[in-house]
Amino acid sequence: MGIRKISLVAGEYYHLYNRGNSKQKIFHDRKDEERFVKILYLANSKNAFKFRDVENAIYEVDRGQRLVSIGAYCLMPNHFHLLIKELDENGISRFMQRLTTAYSMYYNTKYKRVGALFEGRFRSEHLDNDNYLKYMFSYIHLNPLKLIESDWKNHRIKNKSRALRFLEEYKLSSYADYGGEERSEGLIINVDDFPKYFPTKQDFHKEILDWITTDPR
Image 1: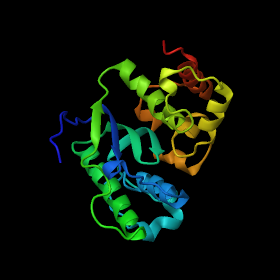
Image 2: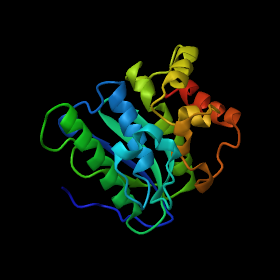
Image 3: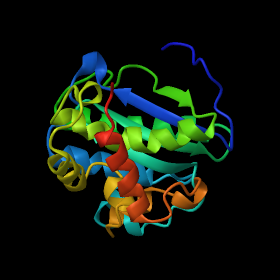
């Protein structure tokens, strides 16, 4: 594993991401996706849990003190993105170790494989200014558009309605939670620990619409 280029400091915001080893898929079906999302919730605790003991009521578990605050997340077929605020020293490292280890154990058992699932240590970007931090909410939530228009960032999206509908129906991110949908997965994110860039769901949708209608030229 390489040496981390930035320090992870309590109270600061970071974009974290990792992908499958050799860019391999890490989610093959709905059960894989649901498992990762549930671990995303459960791993964010200073307490330790055995998944099998709580899997029927994951979002009812009293996690106690959290390791990090999650502002946004998105799963893609071979990688994932997280917007994180470090709460305590080493909180991010402990959280990510729990998250990737638990999912790797599940994946390797299910698919009868051995070895590293992820491409080394997770990568991180320090979101050290307000514009960068606000942008990352859009960047993470817009990531799924690559699945229907791989080069959309370099060309204006022609069918805005289709793009917005796709994002609304894509349940593997926190887009639905910012869009006002009430669901158990909404407990994963901790919006009160982040700046109030989008006071209402209308503000959030306007921000997303602005990004997909902006001419990249």
